[in-house]
Image (tube, rainbow, N blue to C red; front, side):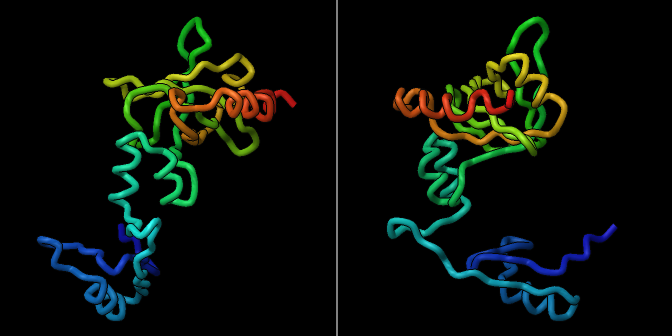
Length: 177
């Protein structure tokens, strides 16, 4: 089963193939022969440093969610499902794929589906593939049916309490309305 791509978007330093010998120009020439287009992007900078996927991954791995957000132009997020643990109000977020997680710790997050958003604290454990969240029963009912997105806002250890109180007041009970 072929994918039949119509267009590739690559940076000017993109490499592929054996020992990275394929260049954007080779991809462009191949596309002319096989019927797809290739757009080659110039570098973009933030604070005089080049924005790259490597830099974004490093920021997330280091727990610098602000830098990752600035580099991407949006919050770091991932998709998955919520599973309720037996006999308690803990929801486990199960990612759809092996994705880049911030380091173990507590984070303020938005949990979203197609119609609702819920602000809560998430816990990433050092040896866990799941993300644990305290969810009330209404949130569990709302988010356990569909695929959801978890949007990482900031480390709970660096959050300013007033910012968190305001966020909770603005969002927490939106799923009940």
